[in-house]
Length: 308
Image 1 (cartoon, rainbow, N blue to C red):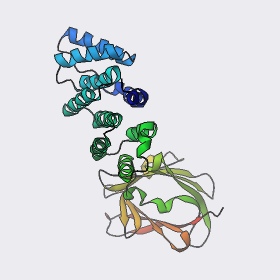
Image 2: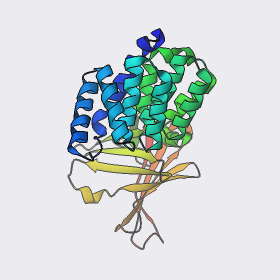
Image 3: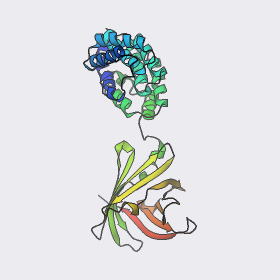
Image 4: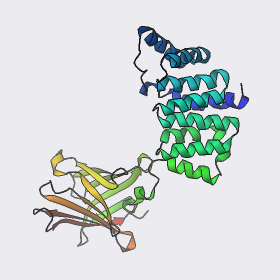
């Protein structure tokens, strides 16, 4: 077995085996096939690689369209025999049959790294990045010493960035609201405190509000939806009155974050956050009872940063 393969495969297999339960075995065409699939799954779960390879080779012969079996045949091939070429072929076949690119392409890329074919590895990782962010792949590469050699490579850094969720500029549009704040009304009276923090590895902004009058507390989750290109806010408070706080949606308008409950709510609600001089943030809420033709201000406040 290739010594590099022997040292490096545990990370990729731990990454892949941990998620086997996501992919059920394909329906058997006969009882014998079902028994074979069960025995093959048991062998690979027990890391009995030679037996697993034998069984998955049989299963892919009986069920040539079984994507899961081809993927597991690739894993077994590489682990049992150190045969990166045959492993790649099995991974590519699984991909062709619709298996998850997140797993299949990572297996292909890792086999290229083991072979020392870094150009092919980069091309495969770029194919993987084109499928969208994958925190599992980022984590697997970060924990695998074979990828350390690429850490200063700009092309590799761009791939990691593409694979890392919530790294594009759109996810940072509401970052101006992050901080610890003393909240005052326009006359300067303190009305509450608020802490807005980045969470979920930058995919979420979480707000924790507390009224200066006491009693009222609230929390909101704010996030960018890449599929719709919009921001959303879901706010809940300790009143338990969920209908009082409909979900808001919107985005940046002239540098301000504008989120709206939409025309189907009554009254319609629109909240605006804008940056002010001196590091302040203004938060203003307006209601409309005529579908958005006219608006009435129902809340106006200024967020003043807490100085350490």
